[in-house]
Image (cartoon, rainbow, N blue to C red; front, side):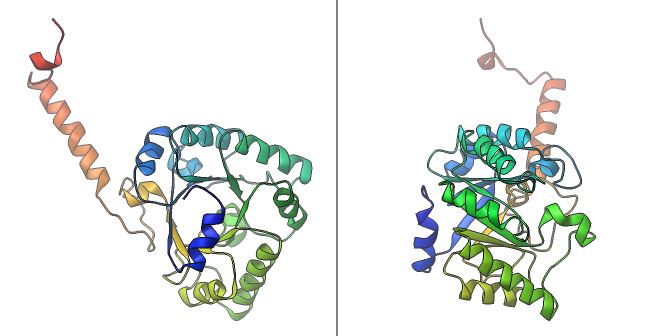
Length: 263
């Protein structure tokens, strides 16, 4: 996937869209060699890479650094970058400055959370020629308002609110919408009512596509594994075993061998 139009085409053709996060050049290079469709440079970098407990510590400067690194190695993959906490809530000029920082760092589009209160910002970004991906449900930047990372849309009123938000984002020109931690039946219903594709994370099989944090796919963080994560390799064990083998070889005088040394 190389262009924003590919998202609509895949939905029209009934083909699923696969996405993962990436935060640096080496992992982006591996994703670029895979069949995964698109990459999100997520503000989850604040948690996955920098060790914070939420995404709120991500800044525009931090996101630009990670976006630039990923873009340097992600040739052939459509690249989306997260607008971090409050960067799009301080008016159009501040939001456009943040968008400019991410796009000039290599992003082909931006993602932002929620919709109420920044409709004008979304419309302005789209009208400025930058594709926008929406994000509703469990929006991590609102974690303090939600009282933690919790499933959204479980009551009739909350489900109706999410449906309204999805239609609002579509009408504002978003090319796709992430549904995070939403009941599967509701996510499927939202998906069926939209012409733009939905990307699920913890939202069941009925969305148009799926996204996971790359480190979760690779099993690199075993400390907390959300219900919606599927680990495709025990990466933590594989990498730790490799380090232990290296350590053993060094201490047993098995590394380096003559072939690994210069004369």
